[in-house]
Amino acid sequence: MPQPVDIAARRRKTVFFSGRVQGVGFRYTAKTVATGFEITGVIRNLPDGRVELVAEGSRAELDAFCAALHGAGLAGFIRDEQILWADAKNEFRGFESVR
Image (cartoon, rainbow, N blue to C red):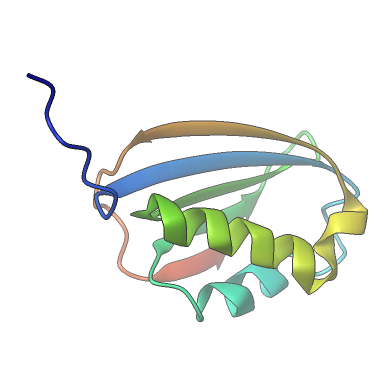
């Protein structure tokens, strides 16, 4: 018999954003938007010009947070997103932007 799915279970969402995502306030905006969600994680610039977001929370919160990023004026800078899902590692204490 299959186990019921816990929709509130913590998940880890890693997103690699490409486009004009560095030097446009992307990380600052993401950190500001994150305060309205029950998530933890980090956002950082990568040497290849992409921005990496690693966030943990319920799938619903993570999806809503990513939708809010688009709605916060960042959608026009994003050309592509690569999304990876995994089990949460519970390694973050809040949400921060790092260089």
